[in-house]
Length: 375
Image 1 (cartoon, rainbow, N blue to C red):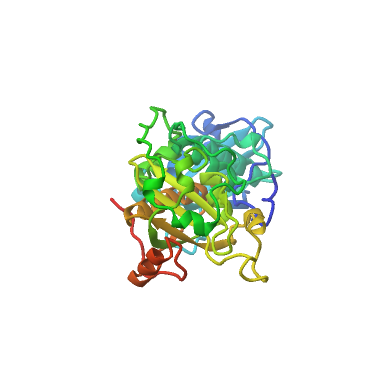
Image 2 (cartoon, rainbow, N blue to C red):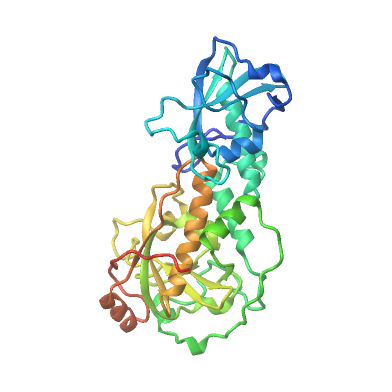
């Protein structure tokens, strides 16, 4: 996979096929004495804990300009070394801080070798395959859909509740009625399903890490629970996200026939609280210069972020949604060697909420104020 399809920029860590077997200086001590003629062959970002897991404890070399080094020899005889970057624009951490296994900071590392072909690719593949395995993804079997799809869907599978009895006949076929009809329905019209206890399944290591960090709740969606085709509540917040990220997480959206709302996801968390995510006046149905619903769903670019309305009966479910999206954002970014960025969610103002109540939960306009994760 040389680059992502449909507008995604190439990953910093790319799978160039299955990584070659290798040994480190912990097995062959001669690798702890690197040659003088080593040249720079690229760099990457990783936590110390990731490299410690892959390569073991780094070797100590008195008088070295590097504080941390690993030596690797691949099965074809190629030798290279991974060292802490000395040219980084950021101040280097202390020796103790850098080697803290609990430190999840992504540091920059250099790859040094003496005339080794594709030295950088070798290390990238080793690290990438390791990261994907920790996310429940077989990197060597990945297609060209890219890391965001693979990791997003793996997280979605891990967080899904068992399927309840009710189910939409065909998600995404226009079921659920138009936007105005769905918004006008009251909560009493929809059946109530008791929360299903989550299955006792061991999560992949990286997913377990973000679950402990962000505390997202397991969920099911309108694709499993037919009652979620009926929106209930009022506008509580707005959120910036690409449509494909929501599709990877929650499956195909409900397709509405109205103009104001065209795409919508209904989500029920394991504690029974519900949230609906939908567009508002964002498509060609209200402005011919805007993209169509199909174009929005088809554009798979990390830059295709748009505003979504978050509707629920109280604010806490919106914060649970924020925790879910923050967790998968963390997983995807770190899987690609990038520092995670905060998910953009804004709390709706009181006037927006009042307007939403009058419009059946489909208020226009944005909100103000940052949404904080619930404890």
